[in-house]
Amino acid sequence: MDISSFGEFIKSYFLWRDPMIVGAVSGAICGFLGVYVVLRRIVFVGAMLSQVSSFGVALAFYIGGFSAFSSLGSMIDPFAISLIMTALAALFFALKKDFFRISQEGAIGFGYLLASGAVVIIGNLITHEAHDIADILFGSAVVVDPKEVYIVPAVAFFSILIHCIFFKDFIFVSFDPETAQLFKYPVRILNTVLLLTVGIVIAVTTRALGALPVFGLTVLPPLTALFLTESLNRVFILSVLIGVLSAGLGYFFSFILSLPTGASITTCAALFFLIGICWREIKLLVLT
Amino acid sequence: MNLPLLIKLENAAIGYDKREFFDSINLSIKQGEFWGIIGPNGGGKTTLLKTILGLIPPVSGKVHYREDEPLTFGYVPQREKFDHIFPISVSEFVAMGRYIRIPVGRGVKKEDWKIVMSCLERVEIPHLKDRPFRSLSGGEKQRSLLAHALAGEPDILILDEPTASMDIKGETAIMELLGRIKEKDKLTVLMVSHFLNTVARFADHVVVVDKDSGVFSAGIMEEVFSGETLSRIFGLDVTIEQVAGKMRIYAAVGGRDR
Image (cartoon, rainbow over all chains, first blue to last red; front, side, top):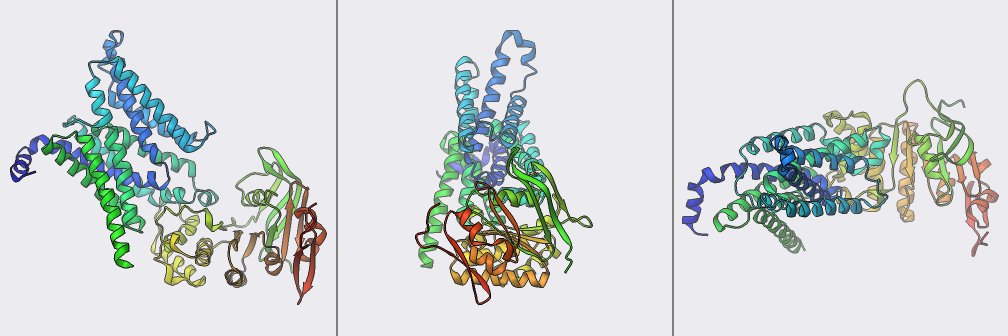
């Protein structure tokens, strides 16, 4: 990267302003909610829900492609279908996690694989929008839909609002559900609301960024933050900051180096994690 | 002395999913009593505790609680049960014990933090308030758990294996601290333990349970704690002797397997 390419990047701000806003907000909210996902040891819930969200989008394209549904096609909004399906998957996971009488990881794996297989099959059936589906899966989209500039921050705002109100309660039911039940806390309702916010945010951000970067932003910033600090509040703050930086730098490098955006964001988040490990190791070495 | 009745199990059948472990239990727990709950692994101790706490309903019969004002329970779970991935400080952990008095959607206020600090002082670890809970030693964790239970200003303290995996010094320190707090606050204590001598030394009442042999016996220590009952439920020759006015329990060396 040289100065001229950086200058070009600044000059063409009208191209990257909207995707950067959406990316940064997605990084912040995924980083925040990802702390719960990592602490509750349900990391692959992020992968499963983003895959279900992709399946919802692919399904909407597929239904819209039928001539029999041509009048319906214009009414089927891929975003709405993906949101409903992801919210249903999150609800099912929250309420019926013992449904299969298998481990939690097993149920998540089942959901992930079913959605992934279905996305590939549907992608194979529809040729016209195959490129759009690939964008959704891997986040290669360089531009975002103008309405997402409003939808993503609005969803992030409401999620944060809910989490500000119930912060202590979400932490309590995540850390010690047995005592929460003894204290007559509505453990099941709180878990459902928590997972619903995760599901809705993942559906919305997957539509904007793609499944891969959303999974990356949900897992890697919280992991890095947990490496760097022993304070729970600081873990949330650091995770949000790392999420924003990963999305911003990922988009920047993708822009000037012509890299796929989703992969660039994910790699930036992974590099922050590696830097976090090195930082901690050096700190331990200095202390000893 | 006529102590106020806190909990009464009346002809209660306890168990899970309509499967009865014991069919007709009667048990009265009064204020200020120290109950030990003993029995072999899988004998029904946890089921009894959960029924007393109201977490699972009795299959039949009734559980009555004090009527004039609702009972508040302080729970001291086994310290190994917490996931160490959570970066929770000692004071944050103790504050969670206060949540029984803080409704959903309301944050922890200044007054609550004052109570948290006073609980840490009562268990003699105020200096550890900012330390991560996961970095504490076994004894320090047990004190934090006790402070966590006290933070809710309970009527009844429930302890699940409070001295498991502790050396004799740590065990004595925790049990003596518990005894002092119980006396000072006039608390009622229910303690599940595998350490029969600890129960014999500190409790005044005991429940002996074993669903496999159908034993359920509850009452004052001297009446219930017998070599015969203990031999039956543990499948070993167990003898009880009085040493310096205290019960001492011995299992026969190479105890005969029943």
